[in-house]
Image (cartoon, rainbow, N blue to C red):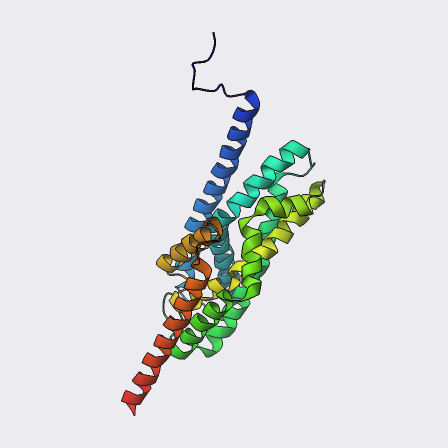
Length: 259
């Protein structure tokens, strides 16, 4: 019997591709949920103290790593899905897991660096219970530095690569399992170049503050998904700089009152 007019028949290939995309998205969602839950539990353990011990340092790195996985995987989903579709068509020999592992390796390295900076900060700068710097001057500096970076050409170039994973993969495609891993690392470096300064803002808002974590994750996702005609990057840069100036002004006014 012929298919009804206006309802095109789905081919087996189309259904297979749809199922594959759903499987990848489901796997990413599971990883994000587990990472978020584990991050909260790790944060609760860190709040019990133990600064200066090796166990505390290891837990701090684990918390940063889980947080980066939960925050960055949603915005990496388009590139992972694009790789999956191209790899199936070209029979590249690599796997989605290897490409995603390349992305994850970049953010693992960033998490290690962030944890080391965090440990250094804690030795000289007081933190709140939610791991935000108490110094208004340092907080203002973080906001203004992140805002200034948002306006740089380097940030814009990295963002373009993140917005167009199809063009990136078309220009850098190579077959093989190691090639899939390297393409994941390569694209992950652009992702890092796009987002690292925004992650530093967590030291102002609170490294364990879920509202800040969720807000930044949603912003990063919107920045990568919205078309380039939306001036989100420039607008956020201006807002962060203005915010930092306001915080600096409040800090100066507070010091004046103390005198």
